[in-house]
Image 1 (cartoon, one colour):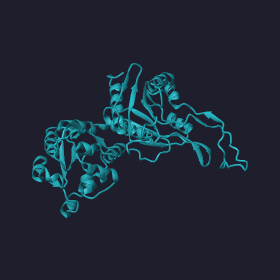
Image 2 (tube, helix red, strand yellow; image 1 turned 30 degrees about the horizontal axis):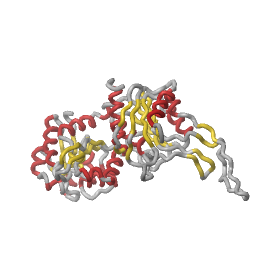
Image 3 (cartoon, one colour; image 1 turned 135 degrees about the vertical axis):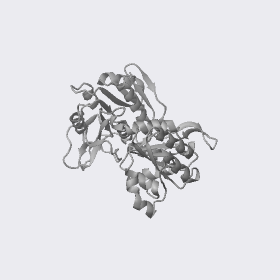
Image 4 (cartoon, one colour; image 1 turned 45 degrees about the vertical axis):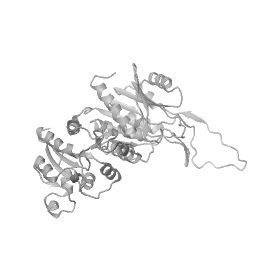
Length: 405
């Protein structure tokens, strides 16, 4: 990492003291650090201590004319190779996720054209709150990298996830981020499908599945963050893709298959889209109207192409084909049979039936899955979809490094 540079944003919280050791550890590796110290961060560490370790001026005021004449917030946010936020508070995460710029730190985050690595630190209840989880998931989909938080005892006396990662853990994450183009999955091409397909009945009606696309978008972002050249083929959804992936928008199952085949050859295929199994034999050219006799029209359905099976048996088959099995009963049995039948290497299986509250994984922000391979079945705990994506990418990385099944 010698000769590289980092812009370190120090948020408020007792974990801010770790940022001083982080600066020292980076200096040992020849990494130059400039720092933005937030007003809250200055309650825990002093500008003098940060300046002494970075040997650089510490920035804090968005409206300092001196700073703007020497190095404006735009240049400051783009002069480094990587932007690191440690500790990343709920406030800083929420501002970036919401596109808010009220101080130098949040303005620099929005203005940067470099990768962002966040090391969250906050009370366990804050980290687990729905609003903070939404922020984290939005940022992950946008391509923001995360390290931690870790489980442990908090300064407030509570125990659980929320402790900022240790400085050496953050250094390791920085090393991975700076080497992202040639990183763990560098040089590999990944193809991901996400969202539903829509099969028109007429110009105003269609057949579709209840898929938000959140899991697939998170997987695409995580693959790109690991260095893969990632293409995301998406059905109609209303979420933003990571800027680091190539987004191809489609509507029908046939459109999705054509888009996938156009992107072959690929090394990795993750087929997470909820593709409609059937479509109307003929889509009406004008709206189907109710008859005066209130008769119900007869719809003839035909089978859509099976995208997972097509890629699983394709002459340009990706080296690793991963499918998804959304089931409502006998989840493991159906998913295991699907893996073999469709020629997939792995299947990610989950139960999409509604719970006692009437809620389902589809459309939600959390997921609980099983990873099924030819030889193993691994049950993962319930977690945020962004965390599922990162864990899956870890397994993909191990597979290509020859340490996984």
